[in-house]
Image (cartoon, rainbow, N blue to C red):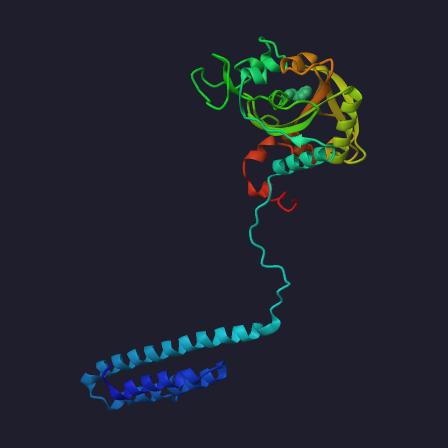
Length: 350
Ligand code: PHE
């Protein structure tokens, strides 16, 4: 842009802008360059006096100057608006307002149930025991008095590791198979071998069965085991502890009953049923909730606890099952699909 008049107009625009500090002033100043009587507009009118062959160069220079002036004004406007926005906020910022909600993580419903169960049993002196998910046949079945021909040992029911696999940190007898534990009852054995009675533990954890997945079955699920060993423990103690637990979980109005059942490692064995007045579709119906029984003296003997001195009870319940009952969830697969629409319904209830 060689035209000195245009250069001056651009320079004038540049030097006048720093003093422009609000919108009306900006409009006014802009008009002195780009308005109908503005210097650039006036300059453009001079085209009549320009020789024909020089007109294209004149027009090009004019447009170039106009472009520069317009962008100078646009930048200044952005700066003015920013300053005005900040001024408008001024001291009026209320730091006590909650922040704009952002996506917040929440605990998985199964984690919540597990924590709830733990906190209830903590109140009555239970501590948490844990053990491996990979087990040997001895811990999962033999030590729990489960006969060799019990169907649970079948390869159709239990996930076994190939015979040559090795888990250095899990002892096994020669040629014994490793498997994925089918219940948390193996933790009873590990606890009794590690600690001397009296014992009060709960053992929440993951279990595996060769189940075909459907609305109520999953090959991978969670249980909580309980074990109580002391002097002169009776079925009354078992019933008392479970009633306390189920009242804390399902409310004061829960009714419970023990129904005779069979497990190889408890004698006598029971299923616990419960009835709750406000449980959606299942209100006022007897529902099976867990297995339990008095620890079989044979099991105590296998882990070197004298059954004449010590007695105890054990129980096991499914964490998925409890969560489904508590929240009216009708399909176990929801827990594992990571669908935000499902999970976010639980995220606010920490
Ligand atoms: N382990 C049993 C099951 O998975 C439940 C149970 C635990 C029963 C402890 C009695 C005592 O079905």
